[in-house]
Structure formats: structure tokens, C-alpha cells
Length: 219
Length: 274
Figure 1 (cartoon, chains in turn purple, orange):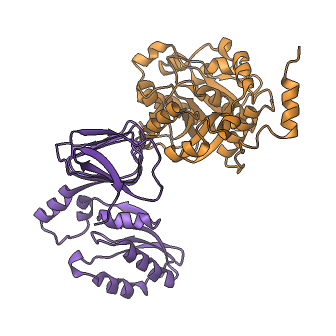
Figure 2 (cartoon, rainbow over the protein chains, first blue to last red):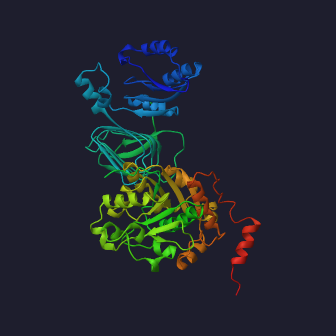
Figure 3 (spheres, rainbow over the protein chains, first blue to last red):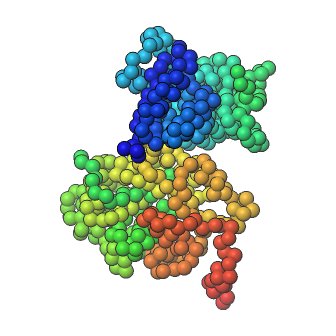
């Protein structure tokens, strides 16, 4: 069946560094399909990694259809390259795979960041106790509230509240920061009236007691 | 309750905000689809403020309503009002406003299921707002058309409704941008098509140009598409119906609308000199 799409899975754990590359190049020859859904589990892949994987597949004339992962960063990287992505929640993934992480480790990963895929539309409110990463836009009329940082892989056009429990170091980051209102800890600011330059991610944080917007730094 | 298994297309026409043209679109789309040969039912789900019957000019022919059908006081075919000039189109009128007190999503599903057995298209005219009436209508629908105007409040409400439809598993959802004024869009006094689709992120099923003839036809109870009008809005409605049936018709370009010689002549003929 040359037209069939099959799923292959990368089952290497994160600690083995770039070992997944070897496994992939070994497995790639045995794929007799012209398109593929890739499951990367908890593997943390950068844009560079995914580009490389894509080129490997292309060499074999295989079309990379989608990427499935439990790792938020892999999902973001893949989305940035325009590949369809599916985020699997950790618990969900555990049902069909043995994870090497201990329970306490897993708890840690879970509590660090909350991941939301999809656009928040008018009237929708997303409230989490920790950091939140949104893959999609926050439309006017929608509200994101987080105990920690708010990161938006998309446009922020609604209201965002970071550090709701008083964390004044919390930041709000978005690819396009055009909010109605920004709130960090107990500070409130109106969104900028002029449109920001497109194509530069920006972040808002508290400096000297007021909320300022600056180009986002990579760290 | 078993789900509808036939391949009838049950389409909810909704907007969130009132007065953007849900009912007008339902009436015109119903007539268009029917005149293209598809047996079509239009269901007025706006029990509180019903007026789909007015727009279709069928008010005086209503005997039974959805209410009597549900109470099993009459058969479905007794309640359906067939349009005289367009026999492929039937209207199931809304009952009296007090129905809202007891109507459940299951009742709506039952009605739609009955209609699905006999029609190819079931268009549901959804009430404005996102309260019970809306929820009932959503429960019975498979796909949806969102109607919005190029103004900020209508777009905001549409966005809210899309979120609710998404969480209810209604798809596909398509967009109709109503009351487009090419001149105002050109001078950027009105939200542009891109502004709207940018926020709502939905496929555009069609544009409907602002047209005074719509008001005239509404007051007469004769949908524009019924009388074979060639007015701008009528053409838009008929294009939307064709696209719904799977034909590929390019979207009109608002910036070119009304500048051609034919349009100018038509406008001249419609202008009352005396």
C-alpha cells in the first residue's frame, strides 16, 4: 500500500540526547508509505531538529503530515514550521506508554506550565494557577489569567492577567501584543493604541512600578 | 434519543447579535435552495420573536406550529406550510413564546429528526443571544452559518457564538458577511473583509452587499430571490446557495461592485424621478 499513512513512534527517552536521530535514520528505510504522522512523545525538539527530520523524510520522498507530542516546546517548534500538531496530555500518553519519569518528576512537569491549544474567543476565560502557554490567538473579549507567566504563540487582542496571586515578576509574552488591557500582579495598564511592528514578539513586565512593553528576549 | 442518520444537511443560521440578517438570509437561502431543486425546510427557532413567516409572506397561512407537532396534536405535514410559488420550500412555524418555558434540546432534536426524513436541507433560524433558545437550536444542528456585519459589536458577538459552537461540536462553521458597503470599506470607514476573517478565522461562504431592495422585499413578504430580482443582494444570496451545494463560485470583489456600466444603468432605472 503506497498511499497508506502509518504512524511511527520515537520511543527514546529525553536523557539519551540525540540518540533519536540514529533510531530515526535506521527506521526511515523500512517505511513504505509516502506520508507519515510522527509521534515524538516527550521528546524536546527545536525548530532545527524538526527541519532536519523533515529533510530526512523528504529525501525518502515521505511527506511529514503531523507531529504529536507531549512536549509543549516541540509542538510550538513544529507549529512554527507550519506542520500540523497534536498535543497529547501527559496522563493520556501514559496510558499507552511507559514513561521513565517518576511520579514526582511528572508532577513537576505538569505543574510548571499549562498548555492550551486553540484560539480563545470572545467571552471565554482561561484561568490557571501556574504559567500558561497558548498556541493560538486570544481574541478581543477573551481573558487569560495565570498565577505565573502568560505566553501566547499568537496574537493577544483581549485581556491578559499574569501573576494573579501577586507575583510582580510575571511576564506577558505574545507574538503580537495588542491587548485591550494588561494586568500584572495588582498593576493594570491599557493596551497601546498604536499598532506594534509586526513580526517581533513582545513582552510586558513591571519595571519601576509600571507595566512596560519591550521586544521579547530569548533566554 | 438516536441521532439523525440521514444525509440531510441541518444548518443553523446564527449570529449572536440581533438584527444582522439571520432571518433574511434564512428566507432567501431557503428560496434559492428550493428553486435549485432541493426540497428545503426552514424552521423558525426564534420562538420569542418569530418573523420568518412574515419574510416569506406565509403569516396568514399558518394553522399549526411546531408546538402542536411536539404535543402530538397534529401531524408534521399538517403544520408545514408549503410556499405557493416555490413548492420545494416548506416552513415549520414557531409556536407561541410560552413554548420557551418547557422546550428542551431533545424536543428540538425530535423536530429536526422528523424534518430530516423528508427534506434535503433543514435551515434553522436561530434566535439572537446565547441563552436557552440558542442552546436548543444548537443541540439540533450539524453545521452552522454565522452571519455578521462589518462592525465591531457584531463581530465580537459572532466570535463568542463560534466559541460556543466549537465546544458543542458543530462543524463546519462558515461565515457570511452581511450588509457590506463597498464604498465605506474602500475609504476604511468600515471593517474590511480581512479584519473580520482575521479575528473569526472562518472560511467565508459569501458576502452580501447592502441593498435597499432587502427592506422593500421584507415589508412585502417576498424574498428577493423569489421574485428573480437582479439586485446586488439577490445575486449574493443565490451565490451563497450555490456554494452551499458545492459549486465553486468566486467571491464578489466589493471594490469593483457598482462601477460597471450595467450596474450604473440598473441604478438609474431604479431611481424614482417623480
